[in-house]
Length: 214
Ligand SMILES: Nc1ncnc2c1ncn2[C@@H]1O[C@H](COP(=O)(O)OP(=O)(O)OP(=O)(O)O)[C@@H](O)[C@H]1O
Ligand SMILES: [Mg+2]
Image (cartoon, rainbow, N blue to C red; front, side, top):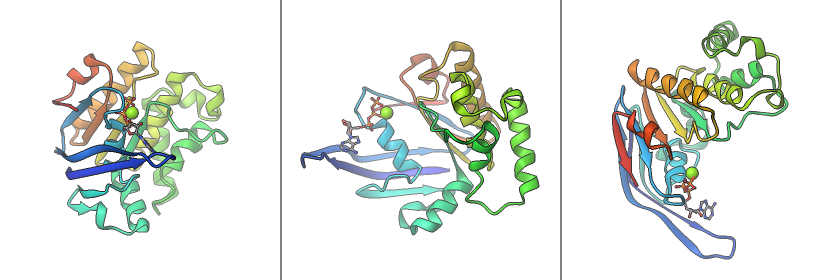
């Protein structure tokens, strides 16, 4: 479902020092597979996920998702395909502070021209499933940390993605909410989705079908 082939990436610091982060790295995740990525801080895990989600262009190599080469697309096609195919979950949620829970979830659908009834029905379903109905009209600043991540999860699932990319999705959560997130990710893979999850928690890494150590 998602294939990263021979990826390389270097950054250049503001002072011009080059930092070589990824060197010929290949990873693939099949449909229905849950893969975890662990490794020391700074080894390039977030970089790998950003490249997998085509939010960052690699210096070399290709990213193929659902048979399409994202590295060869123009930015409009990429944005559209990304919205159709990929859901993101981050450690720090990245909710928009001036939008309510419902609006944040629906923001995930903006890039796709689907009927608004279908999309809002799906948003209500996801809020129901993730226990967010009573907070639908709250702003992120009025939520608990666990509620923020459940909102972000609903946003990630809104468009019916084929791939979920998760960067330390339980990193800031209490055990109960961490379990909700892990169950949602495993359930998604159980229904045929592909999950690539970075984590610092060995117990979470163990729950994946396959573990990648960087
Ligand atoms: N925009 C940037 N410019 C320069 N260097 C960067 C940039 N982004 C990341 N780096 C460097 O690249 C390396 C990899 O960063 P990355 O965020 O991918 O690590 P990570 O494995 O996710 O770490 P952590 O576990 O702490 O989140 C780090 O050493 C970091 O300092
Ligand atoms: Mg990181």
